[in-house]
Length: 187
Image (cartoon, rainbow, N blue to C red; front, top):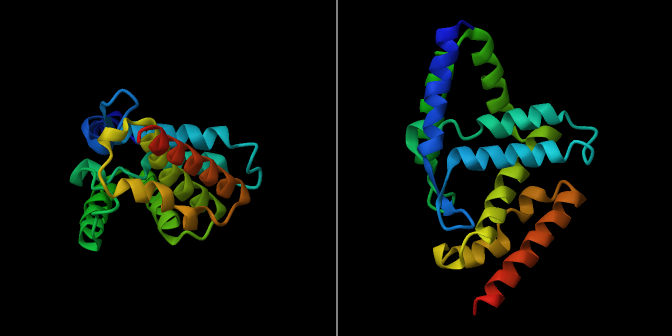
């Protein structure tokens, strides 16, 4: 990859710094997609010893690139995102990936295919982190920033995604405890 190709990728990815997510930070500021991806990556890094059988570098890679399609579509909350929205995002993302240098394009395409298939331990860990990071962030954000449906969603979301791992099941339960406590304290 030459310097211009490298910079072109970075310039496109920079859009995620200004792409707002549905959630807010603990101070009530709208979170960016880049911030979500960063913390999901940090979460993966912190789990290296918890999942010694997994290639956690690969999980970090997945966390870093998983929302790059939102450079083109913006963030659409999971509870309103349609199959048509997903198809548009995936199509625009893959068009961009195909313009990258061959080695990078091949690497990214392989990661996206693995994430989509959800067959490897790495892809399952990534998906759990992606969803759990959103729940953790909601628990950290002011309750008055939650939409009405999120009160129930924060209680039920992602239990199916974490079922592959007892450790993740326990983490999801701890996140639920935080959710219930937050809601109860603000009644």
